[in-house]
Length: 276
Image (cartoon, rainbow, N blue to C red):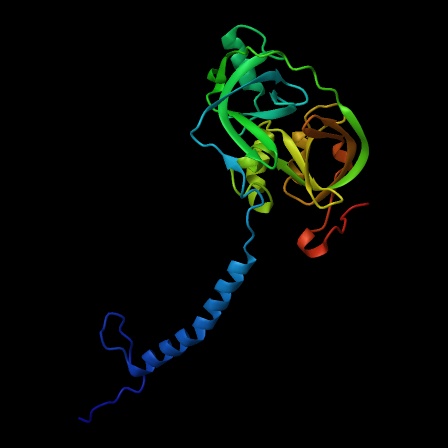
């Protein structure tokens, strides 16, 4: 019987001897694949965007006691005095919630009203671009006691007029340090949960000089409109409202009806998708 020469050798994965034809094809494939992998790695690296809040600081695991006047309007804050400067620390809950319920729990534990009183609160600080938040990490136990410093005089609102602004709605907890990135599409679902839990909404916009400005975002009468902002969170939008200044914070009172989604900034710039 004559020997049959197999012109199409069968490849056996566990065999130590790979047929020459198969080995040649594999080598050619690898040589062709390498340039594509190098190009993909280059594009991925150059296309990455650094988190806009990359320099934000969250003092994880470190509790700091702060003394100041506890206020709940326009949102829960601790009003502190640093030399001749008044600063408002946004108060937040340990989870994805605002501090309203925690303040009520502290008052119940202290058996007294704490709003507009000088108090000592301990929590976890986060700060970025001149804004500071105090997370009441220990809940009702965040209340250390009444403060000893002189009360800070009430702060008047300085009206700045009505303006039309373009920017992004963010949540104050994550953006100012708790999570990175804390803005943009990649953070949208997290921001929606924070705003749903009562975390103060912030509108971030660039002024005429290109500098970032942050506004507490409230309804026309100072009420929370977080539930009306969820579908616009992390998008490039335009809105209009009355702006006022309260020491270190700007506040914009607006109606959700003024919100206008804009085209993707990376593609259309400021092209409006609704009536401008």
